[in-house]
Image 1 (cartoon, rainbow, N blue to C red):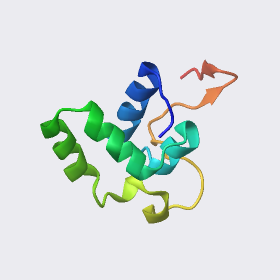
Image 2 (cartoon, rainbow, N blue to C red):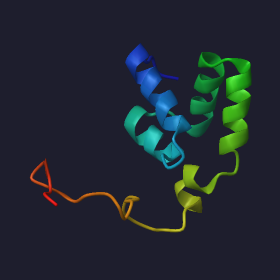
Image 3 (cartoon, rainbow, N blue to C red):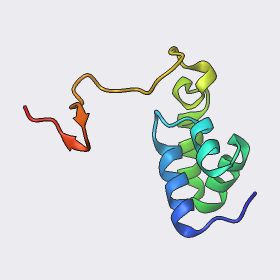
Amino acid sequence: MKKLNGTSIDRIIEMAWEDRTTFEAIEFQFGLKEQEVINLMRSEMKLSSFKMWRKRVQGRKTKHEKLRNFEKGRFKCSRQKSISNNNIAKR
């Protein structure tokens, strides 16, 4: 596993807890494979928190790109406002 600073570790943990962030996205951004993320979570979290996280993500389709039901693009909530030129669109 590569050397990570505290900010990167915090972000990886945050991304791992998010339901819609895939392990592939974490690997793309930080270079950690799924097993390395699991090992990081195990070493950085309390045992009870780690077990709760593993139970939650094990087999979860949204954590693996290959198991998702859409091919391309990103998830976007229908209630999300459109953004143009970095300004939130007016109502």
